[in-house]
Image 1 (tube, rainbow, N blue to C red):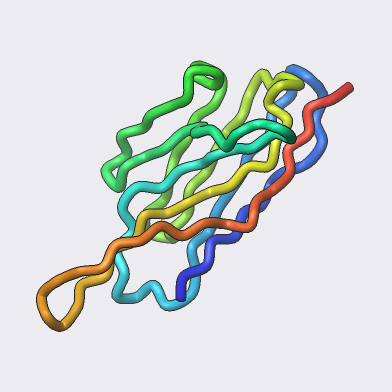
Image 2: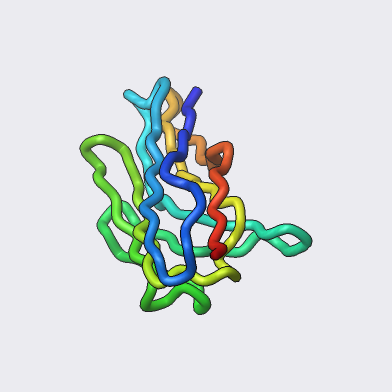
Length: 126
């Protein structure tokens, strides 16, 4: 069982910054973590990709956050981060981290699945 726990959300004024963290824990000894990333969901809207990052560090961003947000990860401690700058009221949402996991089986085959965090609220308001 792998758990993802987010932290760092809160209330911030427009133009401010926040840094979200997401840590993987649990039975991860025999599991590989491939892509990690962040989605967000605002009330009444669909969940949208914010950013993702490969295990090698290649990052991809949603159009609405490009140039303002930076995703990074530390593979040694199995964490992914989201630095959010120049925040706008429209960035208000619940932010969810995810991790694409892979586990090799005794048969030589492998299982892949996506784990999600519980979400952390980010509110941008004056």
